[in-house]
Image (cartoon, rainbow over all chains, first blue to last red):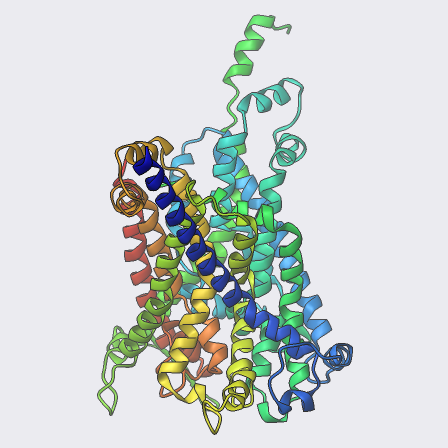
Length: 289
Length: 313
């Protein structure tokens, strides 16, 4: 009896110790993740002179001034960049999500000869990175006069193998074919059935994929850097890279921090609002081993 | 002519919807063919041609066979083969981020799924560690550049504390540049890996854990004898997809070093090398040859993914 009591006490102490260690690790990693962003925020609230003066852990009162300076900067037109990025990212998100759902539905709902071959093909090309075909892609765009155009950044997103795969998996788990049959009996055309009955059923998956693809496009640097060199066409990542290549010592550092903050803020805000469903979405489409 | 209801039913059943299948998948495949397949073939085709700009003069395109590939693997005056050097850099930079990424993610996934530990505030921790994954890598890299620059807060702090007398030039030292890139890659990806591995652990039959505990297995034993073997397929998948991602490493080192891979090209990755040929010297032949090599490596890695996924069943 006594020994038993002693054992359970020992186990309890052990559990407490491991909990303390685990929470310490979690807090350390969280701080590691947040610290650079916190410094970004603090430094965006400080004037250039103040920033040269030394390290500070608490925000100052120069935030609005930096914002106005960054917003009206002559060489880096950040409001235009934000607008450009927004246009490209939203078009990309809508196209990739809609057409991936359409493709996944085509393979999910219909029987045809090349069905299996089509599916295998998409799975096979899923991991090929865009960069390996960049040489040919760039040549093609030059020939068609598509440099400094958003067409080559937006239209290719119609074919997004990863989004397709996610949609296909989602349909397998939620889409009963009886509904399609019922719609047919009611005389609904196939295309209409997809748009008015199937798409609404896919809402959660569509929403998650729209967010992911918006973010992916918003952050994309390689392809836009290859294709866009006119100042008024540049997207946000190109402007950030431009900051890096500019003569650094002459820059107003408060403004530089503000530029970086503006570049990541839209995504952070969306993430804070929707983090729960975004995190759920990370796993839902992944391969189940 | 009037048809009987019976035959109408039979007719309805025999309607083939196959054409709709083709119609629905057509936009995807057409787009893929035009914007991915054709450029890929064009890229491979280019790799057999001499085609570049030298000043204002355009050279080629002239068919040169495998000359671009030979040139790619020919040592320069110092005896270095650039592509091998950059492949080595890519592997080192990848490993430095990926090893801690996978070890820590595995640990966190076990913490989060442990009933015994019963961690509170999981949603908060998951939200925080996943966030960097969505941050613009180029902006994140620029942020680190400003934080670690000669006049940045890190140097200011080190001087204020009297650790150093003059600012450390982090970007002229091989080890610090590489460490910063690894740290950034780690921060960008470990949250994502944690969430994937968590899903994997939760997919394991919970009865197995209970049975092991009843049999008196300690948590370390449970991990090595139950969790790890059953998690293997997902772990292998995660590692290889991370490797394919690592092969594409570009944004972070490109912005951090302003495309130069400083110091002494020790942080130049394969894609940065490709980017230099493509953007700076418009050398389609050499850029094509590098692309083909990256394509082959990716293909081999994908084959490994495929095999790791199908072996189990």
